[in-house]
Length: 226
Image 1 (cartoon, rainbow, N blue to C red):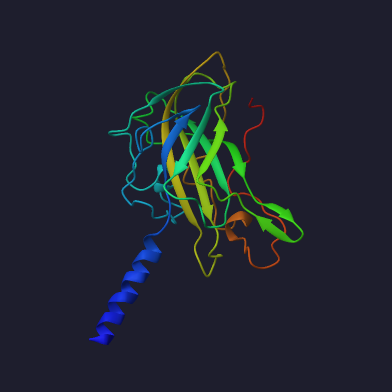
Image 2 (tube, helix red, strand yellow):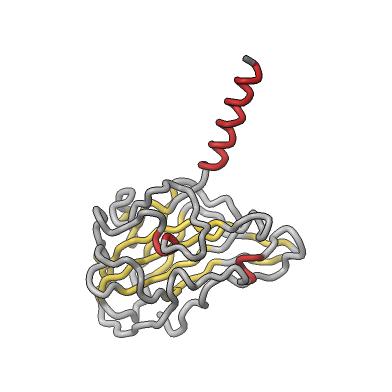
């Protein structure tokens, strides 16, 4: 009986360790905080990461579609905040992307071009790195951007299990937004999947050994945004 109880306890611990991650589940525009998944596509793998660099799940997460998700009206230049169920605790960078929908955001599968508007990498001081491990991440819709419907994508890449012994983990969510304003800029971007390679230094980095610089995987944030 003792051995059986030990096995059950070990299995429960392993399950909890595997499932105890985090997910971007709530969007705020300016000072208005909306309901969980009201404007963020709900995925089907809860808070588990995406690890396959060739998968279309890298766009908005597993099973995340526009079905049942509302689209929020925003103005170019508005601030937005993504809130997680719990604070990020795996070391790694956070990035924010946008992709213009050909029609509506709800009908868009993310197969077009994605451009990056923000990277949050580590800061180095005295031989050590500090990461922004927060429960909220805030930035602004570019004020120069052309009106239209977009997917607004946030990604945190956890690199606490260095490649190749471990596999970096992508934590991803997409919000659906409709941008208004007088801007006219459009931006070329990258395809997802395809933007991240297993040879990217920011993907293969070992944060425990001679870690003194870092390049966030994917494209650089677009220039000329305001």
